[in-house]
Length: 244
Image 1 (tube, helix red, strand yellow):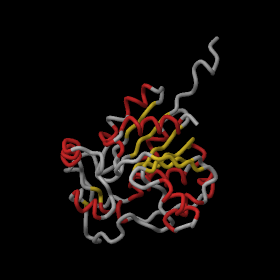
Image 2 (image 1 turned 90 degrees about the horizontal axis):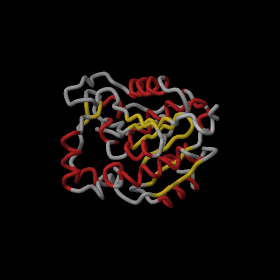
Image 3 (image 1 turned 120 degrees about the horizontal axis):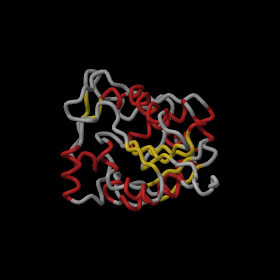
Image 4 (image 1 turned 30 degrees about the vertical axis):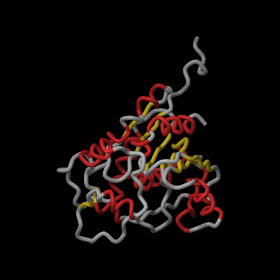
């Protein structure tokens, strides 16, 4: 009879992209995860499947509910990967069911502090938030470094406006057990030392990370979208985190 060592339980890796992106954003990462023996599940959250998708009235709660459904359908250990704005629903799912999650990987992101929102100043009547111009993103500190012209064109063509209700929604985390879930942060556009200093100083935006029982910080120098600029290296770091 084969032992459990010969047939280990599959590790599911749920890949949650940031704003304006769908499951397609992980296309260059998924093959390396599969070759490593993981089971990747790239996610498209509600309102982001097509430019014509219904986005009116969608909130962060809808994204959290959709992500919880994905996790509930999986049999075996789950690693949640949240890139950028995808960190908000990921951290909410960890808070809702911390014992279900084996590890969290935040890609150039982290959990929001209580009551914080990514874009709280979006007009109340705005239904969606289209992908800004590259120059505007760079001005606001969101780097597109490492993505060539063809990659930027593909990004722009396939992007979908983010539901404004999601971007405006504040984060609410309440279960202290979430702080026991092992967590890896991949620093891409932010140097790792900057994050470590913010944690040591307990700066408000890094407060959730400061309270984690098991935090690993790794560096992948590039822009804010390493799934486009350094997909093989990002996959390698996700594999390493998932195998811990």
